[in-house]
Amino acid sequence: MPNAEKQEAPFIVYQMGKVASSSVLRMFEDAGYNRERLLHVHTLNPQAMMMKIINNEDWQKIRHVNDQIEAFRAIRKLYGVGGERLFDGRVKIISLVRDPLARAMSAFFFRHADFFPGMIERYEAGYLTVEEIAEVFYKRHQRKKALVWFDNEFKPSIGIDVFEFPFQKEKGYIHIKTSKFDLTLLQSEILWKADTALLEKIFEIPGLEMPTINTSSTKPYEKIYKEFKRKIAIKEEILDLHYNQKFTRHFYSDEQIEEFKRKARKVEE
Image 1 (cartoon, rainbow, N blue to C red):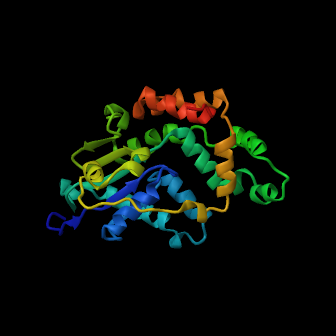
Image 2: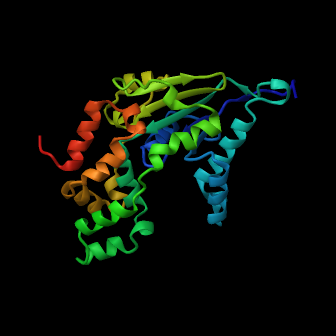
């Protein structure tokens, strides 16, 4: 189809869960990006996508699942028959990383019904302490998901090995451009202190503003989560599992990693 009309390339927010991607998505929506062009996905792995469809009877109503299908189709047709490009321009991808222990804690509480059924009710009734919740966290939280996510997702889906590109730790973000993709990869930690000028440098798009989201009023587990973070000093073996890893040392400086550990150990200033 050499004469087919070229389509506007999609804009994909493609990252692991619990790294502030919803805030990034809201930022682009507030900036007026076309919803049909703006896609939000956690996986483009065909097997993982199929499992989401199988496990959700109402999958057609779930934004993530539909966006994953559309993004998968878009990437498959980046080039048509005979190498004819179907899109006008590269596909833009935004991805984020986060302190892996903080991400694991956030994911654990977000999925508390899977890991710890009845957690909120038992805590509110006085039958459960955050110390007991911590022991379940140590045993059941997602220890490796974030650490291997790019190897399992980016390499097979879009052909980019992010570990081949030195990450600009002092800036907190990097731009990787290939013939097909325009990737912006950043630390989620820099978003909350970024002004409009910095956001323009990061995303190469003017006029962006991070939305203010009040999470405390939207999460039923927020009170427990705050007490957990305030009281629990994370065990050293758990710190090693998250911070002595290729992933963490690629995206964060030694100083940043030590600060993550200091907070997790509850070491005072």
